Length: 265
Image (cartoon, rainbow, N blue to C red; front, side):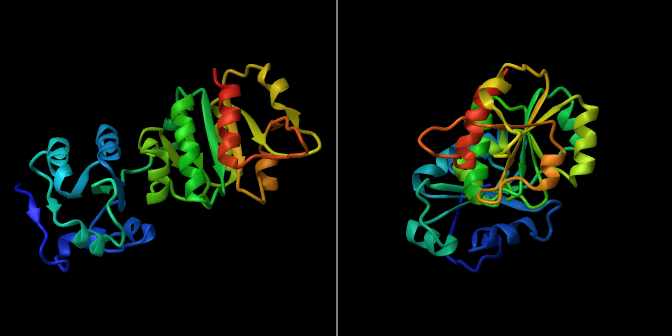
């Protein structure tokens, strides 16, 4: 399939890139699970390595050859002047390439936990920047999987993917149900559940680090409100990071990196 030069922004094949919100992409018609956008050749490469299917690619001059090398001849590649593409997408393509990708089906929770030893659970983390940063830390430090609650921001949102540098496409993840059912599955797979929170009975991360649980699930909550009572009740241990100078907490993304590193096996 030859590269398609853009001359008419009303071309319906370009609708994936036309100022659509993440929610609109997720609900895109004629797709099984919706779409997401992968920005840059690096993120596209990681998406393809994860087995995700591209629907089309939008590329500026120098990145056209990269796009062809990545997706071959079977995927439409659209190209055109930077100003025209910026008008289409609503922003300048600083990374030169953006791909419309089919969302994969999320894995079954039991299958995801089979063989996992270190996992992270994100409860109601609404900021996609924090979600992306946590995924990047998980990918770098070595969490086997991430679970996100129903009210947590979607890891496939554009900002989360961008901040994570595509690691949301590498670290396996899925959505959970309520805490009662989630806790039942975690118990069945032998996980000790540790909640990161500031409570009177919280133990120091330094002390908890020495316990050496074989299977560990680290629960992180939203900025401000923190973990819900249901999350705390479903946990085996509440853990806090020791602080100095009167500071009581870190940004959730920073806290996740500290805790994951300390508890990595």
